[in-house]
Image (cartoon, chains in turn purple, red, green):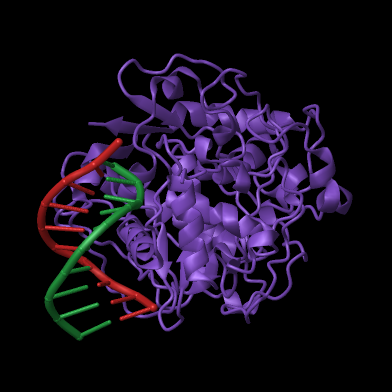
Length: 472
DNA sequence: CCCGGAAGAG
DNA sequence: CTCTTCCGGG
């Protein structure tokens, strides 16, 4: 028979509910949103299934953040096969495909647990927002520490690239940020980081973490519901976002970015984030308000839900010069981007508050790893193991990926990402940046005056920092 | 079960 | 490129 490749099956109009576990931005669930790929990708599909309660019987979030278990492998395979019109799909094949993601760092296997895999949230985000150097982003870094490196980070350029093959012209044409269309460089795709005040400016100070989340155990007990799901809708609603080009090709992808949207509009990087915000908006708000059909329809509220603990994001390591790479290596060295940022962020993340957070002595953060093979100038790779269970994954086989790495390079142009001294961060930071972000209270639709400050920051950044992605 | 190489399809 | 298919090995 025909395979009904049903796409609709998985795509709800507006997902009213998502599993408590993890939620990703809308775009993550839509195949068509997949930036680099024309066709639905397996990880997207998995996300879709996870998102729908009706499939909880076959696949469900369970365990750590980003971790899910396939309860009914055959069924999942069947669904996948249906989607791809591959009637002969089976778990063996599907799992092969899943394994294929290991190198890309999109997924990892949770060792010891059958049918259990874990998403690397960071990767997902990066994919969609390559612009942001999440790796360097404080948030992630912070988390990294948080985890203690339990998980591996993955935001290596390669990974990014893999998911995000190349930005189409539109990418460059349209500026990602509010700046509007500034003409980007003719040549490649340049991405700007303007939106991250914290990156360059000193650190923002962040007040305290919302108490939204409870304790943040490193290893959450099972099913620990990631409590924050719901609030996101408002938080990142497009309102904040500068504006998106209606016609842009990548509509949702850009706005939803939590970091971007949230930060950009915030006067203080985190100040708003921290605001406990309004609950009201949160919870059910989502459902109600989604404006349209979900989809890419204009922007609607993007609900961004993150994984329970982004800890996995840990991208602690930035590898700046890999042995192989040379070109800008110097720059990198000159500016310890990773370092600076990481610290800054780290602080944020760590927030001492929760005692647990301490950055472990392990300090994976420093890790610079040299990838002999990678060529990218500035490469960020994970150093920690990525495995969910701290197994020793030592290193991944990145060799193959080297190719990818070459393809795109992330270079910090400005020189400076400087940044914030590690110590600059107040101790009171919240433990998990991301989470905090999400729960943010929704900013007023109209941009409040408060924005100014941020704007100022923006400016600064503009000049100073630019993140360029160069595709070779 | 899980892993990853190899070849090949679209 | 992203799987899909096979497959030998643990």
